[in-house]
Image (cartoon, rainbow, N blue to C red):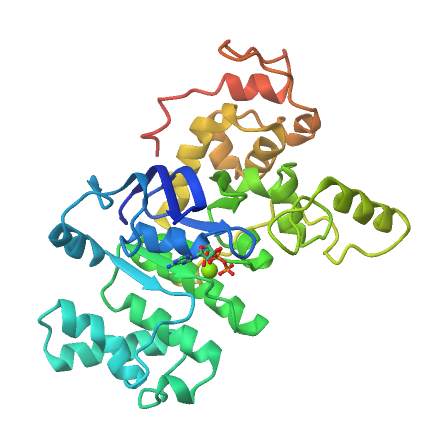
Length: 378
Ligand SMILES: Nc1ncnc2c1ncn2[C@@H]1O[C@H](COP(=O)(O)OP(=O)(O)OP(=O)(O)O)[C@@H](O)[C@H]1O
Ligand SMILES: [Mg+2]
C-alpha cells in the first residue's frame, strides 16, 4: 500500500508574498486525490514543497512518519525515492533521448543491470504509448508526448507516492481520457498514493477519490469527492462549472462591483462561459477490465462511512446512493433509505454540542450507523 502523507499547518511564502498558509490535509494511503485551484494559487509550489524541493516557512509534511520539512538532507534523499513526480513542464533533460530520460532515476538510485533497466524503461514507455519514440530528443516531440515521457520517468522506480502536475495539459481530450485511465490502472496495479494537480474538470469529476482546492492563499476544502462535487461553496462550485460567475476572476480575485456587473450580464441573458451546472456525484473511472480491483475502494468506503455523519447532506446522499445492496448490508443502511431525504438543508448545529438528528430521516439512519464493528467485516 502507498504511503500516507500528512500535511499539517503548512505555510509558504516567497519574500513578502504568501502563497498559501496553514494548509492541512491527509492523503490517505493508496487513494487518488486531486488538487484544484485557479492558475497561480500555488498548486505547483505545493507539490514541490511535498518533496522538499521548496522549503515551507512553517508546518509539517510527514511521509511514513518522517517530517520532510525538518529532516536531514540524507533522510530527504531516501524519502524522495518513494516519490514519482511528473512536473508541470515534464522537466526532461533536453540533451538526453526519451530512453535515457526514463532510465535516469534507475541509473541514479538503483544498481540494476542495463538489461533490467531496459526491461523497465521499455515497459513504462509502452504504458504511456511511446513505444518507438525511445531515440527521440525532448525537443523533437510534441508537448503531449513530453508529458507522457515525464510520466514514464516518474513511474520507473515503482513509487509509493505519485505526484502529477497537470497530466492533461497539452493533451487532446482523447489522450486525456487515456491518461485518466492509466492513472486509475496504475492505482489498481500498485496501490500507490496519488496526487493529481489539474484544471481539467472532467478528470477532477471522474478520477479522484478525494478533491481539494486552493484559493486565496488557503486550502478552501479537502475531502471525499462527493463533498466537493456537491458543494455550494462559491469558489468550488464556480471552478467545477468553469463559470465566470463567482469569486474567481481573471486576476486573483474579484471585487463586489465586478461580481454584480457580471451577474447583471447573465440576468440579461448572456452566457456565463461555463458548462451547465454539472454538480453531482458522477460515476468514477474504473480500472481496465482484467486488472485487479483498486484496494483503495474498500478502504475509502470504510473510511468515508465512518465520517458520514459529519458530511453535508448532499454529499451523504451521493455516498449512500452509490452503495451496492451488499454494501448497504455491510454498513447497516436500510434498503428504503435514500437520498431524496438528503435534499433538506442541513439543520443548524450548535457548536460543541452533540448533534441530534430528526426522527425518521436519513440523518437518523446515518447517526445510527454502527461506527466500529463493521470495519473488519467480510
Ligand atoms: N521559485 C519561486 N520564486 C518566487 N516565486 C515563485 C516561485 N515559484 C512560484 N512562485 C510564485 O508562486 C505563485 C504560485 O505559483 P504556482 O506555479 O505554484 O501556481 P499554480 O497554482 O501551479 O498555477 P498554474 O495553474 O498556472 O500552474 C505564483 O505567484 C508564482 O509566481
Ligand atoms: Mg502549476
